[in-house]
Length: 385
Image (tube, rainbow, N blue to C red; front, side, top):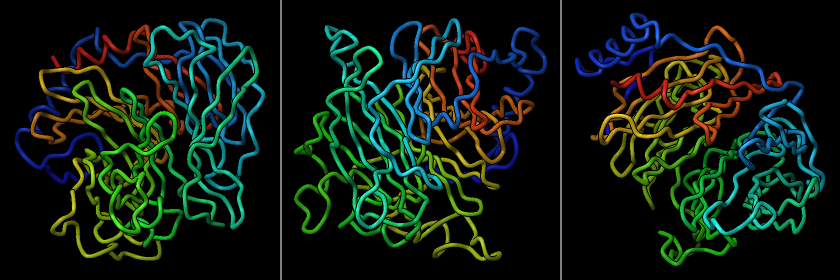
């Protein structure tokens, strides 16, 4: 895989990248039907809407970082608070984080589905990123179960992760290294890792470190700084986006048992000066990123779009620092070959992304707004033709 530092709009490590990037840009500029759509405001006053999941055709569930859960009507914008969320550690970057719904059993009605949450749980020693599940009946959560309270707990207020991705009967979620860099390379804890569990919270028998002495059996990959994007593409490949330090945000294709290098290698700099983090940008035995962002865009979310050209993957990232939606195409060889920056004029921190069942793109911002881009699935497909 190639390591592609990002500059605004396009990254040109090869002539091929220049070609596709320029072609995409010219397509947007030249074709009236492909001009960037104007977002429609659905709802506001949602605090910091951290995660979203579609409940039914007309409603989504939205987590709010301070510990509230809302059901939002996509037609009217009406907001209903759901009760039953436990106390969360809502300090710094902590709070009620992601939400995902298990829809693997089509015979289950809404009240029988499990809703999965990640949140920072107040515990002895500070707070710990925790995976939980519950069911929703009317406006009330019931049967709340903490499935995994990750270790170590920490009094720091940062790098909790955490996004959830479900595929078939397995659940994946990311945990940040909690601001203590050595955690990411230490298999005896969960911090700085992507974790994999069965939907009931038990450990799959084929996890790569299940039989490794002193390793946490839930670990799927390690060497991550602060992963806040996780999704599966249509080919079943798992993609992750994580915050680098000052520069060096990454998109990674996640492989079981792989080490992604933090803090041994990085494309970023120390916050206190112009000094590189780690020992360069690559080392033997380290999986390099598919794409690197310099300067940082601060990716707060990741969405895998329906497939474009054959054997390509299209990703959307919500950018917190540079305030846009980042569209990336990855070719069959695992190389990021094009990038477009959308909704820059809105100038809002994009926190969460969701592709609705009808093809609309929903996105939420740290200003508490929920927006819709109608027909985004069809619009995005035209970008790669």
